[in-house]
Image (cartoon, rainbow, N blue to C red; front, side, top):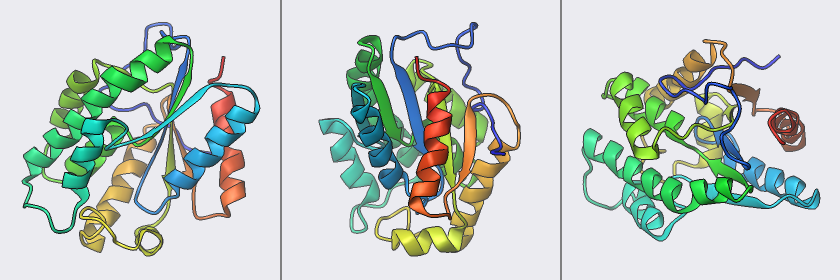
Length: 222
C-alpha cells in the first residue's frame, strides 16, 4: 500500500475538504520520476471523461513563471545563492497561484501541477541549506495557504532518476549525493503517514504507474 503524508506546515480546511468547487492535484518527487508523462496521461484521462482540466508546471505556468524557469534552470546563467533560489521559486509559485490555480479552482476546474510547495521544502530545505520550517512558512505566504487536495510523490532512486532526466538543467546537474538527499527528503515526509500525500513507485512501467495515480485521483474528485 502507498505511504502517505500531509504536507508539513500546510493545513487543509477544517472540514478536510476543498474550499473550492474544483480540485488541485500535484505530481511531485525526485527528478526522473516521470511527472510530465504522468501529468499528461492524467489530464488526457480526465478530459475523456468530460472534465475541464488545467495542466501547469513549476516553476512556470505563467509568462513570469516561464521567465523565472529559464533563469533558475539554465546551466549557463548567473550564479544563484540558496536564498535567492528559494525566493525565485516562490515568486513563480505566487504568480501561478494568483493568476491560474485559484481562478481555475473557483471556476470548478481540475488543476494538475507538476510540483508545488513540497518541492521547495525538500530541494531547498531538507536536501539544501535552509531550515525546512522556514521554507514551509515562506511557502504558506507565497500561496496564501493554498493546499492541494492530493499530492502524488512519484518515487524513483537517484541513480535511475538522474539517468532518465539526463542531468540537463542546473538542479539536475547537482551531485548524486544531493539527489539522494532529495529522495530521502520526500520519503521522510511520506513516512509521517498522514492524509493528503501519497507515494507511488515510479520505477515500474508507465501504464502501471498511471493506473495507481488514477486510483488516488478518483478518491478526491467531486
